[in-house]
Image (cartoon, rainbow, N blue to C red; front, side, top):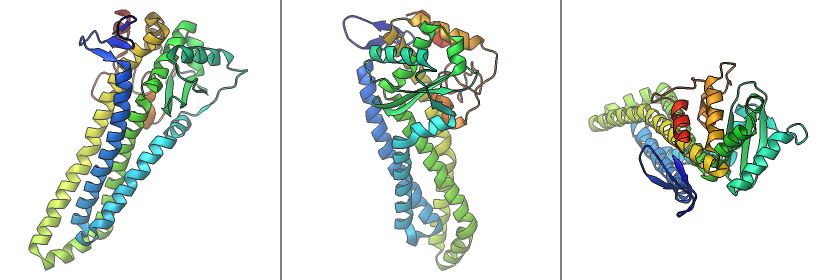
Length: 323
């Protein structure tokens, strides 16, 4: 990708596709998709609740729909207001001390000025593994966490590139969208567990009793159960693949935006090279927050399959070097 510093403002060109991407339009699209996703999750879970009622107890359809919608509301609310705290705790990050981490604070504040956003809260991960991530629902309520290993490994220009990359996720509202998408998967898995428990404790008895009353009703329950199982088995898989694919694309865009902010793509490229060559300890974090990090902290730095949360580092470096 390359940055356009004249003509159209805030526009980058993807060398791979030749497509021009307006960063302001991308941010607006992220906000739009976030709320559409929340609405879609509510409808999806209501449909799952209805199928669950048909399969277990058709007379309780309204009850199951209300429960499903309530789950969607709770999931979306938690994702919007508290996902940043969950992510920081999962990474064992602690608030940066101004005296102890003056260097990191200065770099972050300088990059925030260049990005035109409020300086985020700064956190430190006490780990020799070099990595970083951003979290928060908007630029006014955001945070960046950087490992001690990353600060030791990179020089100032390289650290600025990484911080700018993470700040790009905040500036473009990537974090909000990804948090809501992760909540979607969580809500579907929660309903799947509800189905398994209901089947174990209630469906066998109720289904048997109602089956004797009406052959058509019994067949309807069986069909609903099959559809429900298919939906609950494949929906999390498809949602996860979508989350990973979206995450990989956003990493490319954040690289380009970070280079746009610092006007120094080489600094970010060198940072990626150092992380590519790093052979030390990896950061141990839960799978639910792996996609948020600058590079994949667990599964390997060069993962390129469908389950990878990040694109290959070599490809990211090559795109930056062609800017």
